[in-house]
Length: 317
Length: 317
Image (cartoon, rainbow over all chains, first blue to last red; front, side):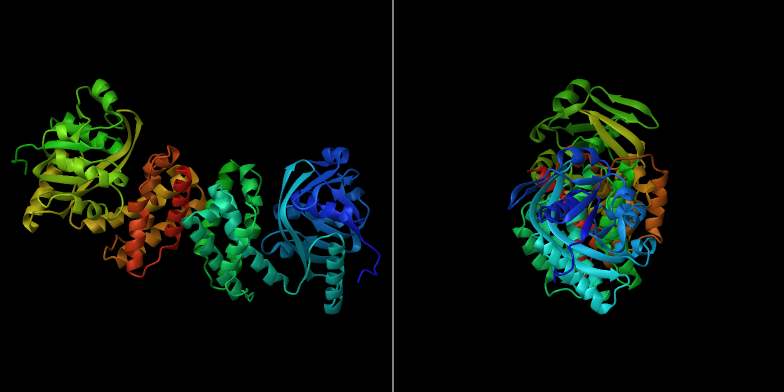
């Protein structure tokens, strides 16, 4: 599968996700370029670091760091690690950094992120979703702490490829990620996979922010554990109505999976703690709208969204 | 109606509610005795103060303050202003302070508070509910800030009075409260009135604690306002299933009523802010259980209860 020449890779948004995957690819010998904003000076000077749970401290001393997308060399693959809240303003930067037939991979949570970005991209670009299962957070400029996992599965959303080309393209991307030591698999149905990932993100992201609590605290107390389960069950019912059936007993499997995870503060916890915009649109509003259009209510999910929206509006004054 | 000799009144729990009504009765010339715990010394020394929204600073310099119920003279009416979380340990104190046919009035929120206390009281005692509509909070030991309102409606729960005696007894109590300048009316159906009051307490008490927000903030933001309404509608549906029909459009009337109130931090906000036990049993668990027994789910109310239970358990270590 790796007969194609290795691609030039661009990372748009070098936070925990972009930093982790970009560093892993670079240390495997891929040519990786990083677009940075506030962390540009620190990364250009100090490089990138990942404190890897299994591999120890990984340091990329010489980083192809860029503070302007227009200056970057044209990239064949672009991994977008920036939060979906910034997608509208990111679109022109993605276009500037992209080769004519580039593959743009949204490493983002939630629903509808590809649909929102697609009209802002030229038809020649391939748009993919990259579903990351990873516990990692940014500790300081250019420093990512990796706690566990690191999967990145790829699904094709839209673009010029026909059915056969899509499959080949996904398999090529998956093969390159695996060369870099990243667990990866092709996703047959991206919409289904996004709903499936929401079953974790909806309860844990929101409750960690609302209650100021880590996964382990939420799992340890009977009331919050019951609430996690009830939220999951609402998402599962909506997913099934949306034509995205999930594995049997999926909520209970996710609870067991999270019990085995290290204690974790999801990204939305950090967003609220640091008063950054959180991905409420993609993780809550879009699934709620999709479910409502199918006549499915998710009362607890809506309540969580309303509570988080209140807190976010107040934090923004 | 006031042909009976004036009663000796005891206040069990002299926080905002007990302090306010006790002071109003004492300044109208009633003999009022106050049972205090942590504030005993301050009140015995400095007296009681109510900063009244309409009447200005009211001071009761000489207070019949007691730190032991057994030492109190037998009271004909006992107004219980302590929180319902302490009812089990309050019961023996109530019995010690009560005359043989005393009227015990629970000035408490929620459902089932009389049912929980009744088995702990002798049959000779009359048990009443007192539903208070008042914005007040305790500012310092012996100092109550009154912001608005001050209604106290009385309903008979259980005891030795027959139907006719109950009505006479309520009218007598109402008349005495009115003599003290306290707006009051008899309640025909105490269970119905408790459900009706819950339509306010369930959303505002819980959300103020969960979101750390006053009524005005909660009312001003579209998401939290919609959530207040959705919570109210769940309580209304449960009340109707429980045989307690409410006035037409009651949630919208309550929203309009709250829009006219001064900005207010409900008691549960203060309980959480000061890490005191909150009335989660009476305001949430009991209505949820009553509704569930009738086959009615209140998903948002349950979620609010679960979130508050999590926070309370964590605060208590």
